[in-house]
Image 1 (cartoon, rainbow, N blue to C red):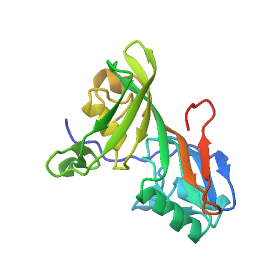
Image 2: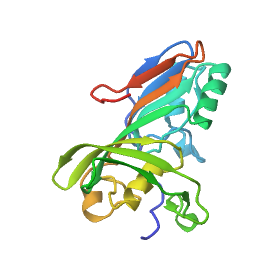
Image 3: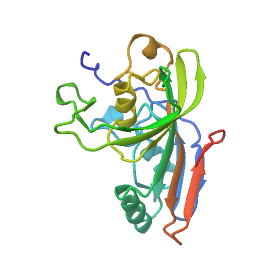
Length: 223
C-alpha cells in the first residue's frame, strides 16, 4: 500500500456545539467527522474541537482525543482536578468506550476479541501496523449489530487505547471500515463518503462522588 497523501485540512462548517453531557466537572460533545481534536502544528490547522469548545467554555481542558476522521463523543474537563482524575481513569483503563463501525465483510461469528499488538508504520505515518515483535498490546471486543449485503455494522469496545486501534484491527481481520482513507481500498473505500466510525458511548467515574456517569448518543444501544 502506498503512503497516504499529504493532509489537506477542510474542517466541517462551524455550527453550534452538539453537547451530549454537561456538569460541573465535565463537558462531552459530539465531535463531527473531519474536525481535529486539537490544533495542528501550522496555522491552517488551528481550527479544532478544543478551540471550539473553549470559545464557549474557556475553562475547558483536554482529556482525550479522537482521530480527525472519527466522529462522536469527546470529553473535556472543566477544572484541573477533574482533568487529573479522569485522565488517570483513561490511563488505568477504567473508562468504558463504545463505537459503532460499518465494515466491509461478514464475520462468521457474532462476537469476538481481537488481540493484535500495534506500532507506528514509520515510513508511512500516520499509519499504524500490526507488529508481533515490537508492537504494544491492543485488545478490541467486537459484536455484530446488523448485516446488510457486503457490509456489517459492528459494536466495538476497545480495552486499550492505541492510535488507530479500531481501524487497524478491523483491516487486519479483513474487515476494513467503510470509507477509511488509510486502511480501506477499492470497494470498501468507495462504500462510504467518510470514515464510518463513531464513538457512541462513554462512561467514567465522577470526580465529585465516584459514581458512574454514562453517556450514549441517541439511537445507540449499550453503555
